[in-house]
Image (cartoon, rainbow, N blue to C red; front, side, top):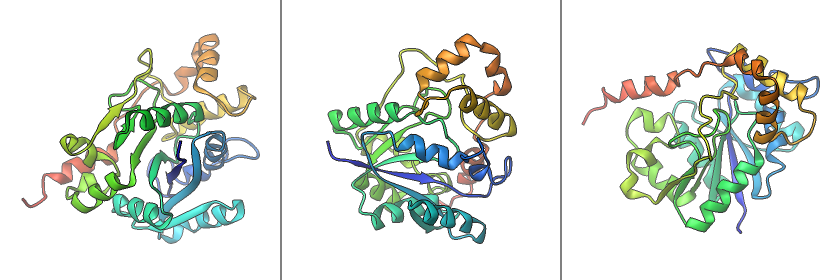
Length: 254
């Protein structure tokens, strides 16, 4: 199979948990570095690229990338679709796996499973989160560069520019789309980092599970043995930034 390049959306700014991607999970790992270490265990990923903004506050991500010899691209802070497209174009990506930087427990085996189905089904876009059956924080989206370019050229709504993939879901008739479901619905589990309680949960996981990479099955095994762990951050909350974008769609001139 052709290798797939991974583009990580990352920025320092966060209203709920400032600087979250550079917060320490362990003495030696930040949220972002742990995520990248997880990704390096994928058999399908070729290049890993950080796509951040041109804001001064994100210089820290540039320094991190240089120090760790990781590819980085800087672009528009508001038009995330534009940033993502131009990043993929600059690095000549033909197929892209989209990962967000607040998901340090991303499972490389899930990425490889989704990538396998992506090639097998010859689709434009595939995910494991539309509809969601996997835990929050294990989202994988893979799409062709040609599909991303179509979205970049045609997306008009704020919600389609401020986020990368809504145009696909709003225009399913224009793309060949597929979703991967887990054998049971685990969408009530929250493994992303968006709030202080999320950070506490992830720190607990990485401290208790010593093997690397940490897989979804490892976490499920741990919480089945110690179910109280999930009470640390057991409430999934709506994506407020996306909801705000949807609200702004109403003001778009027709």
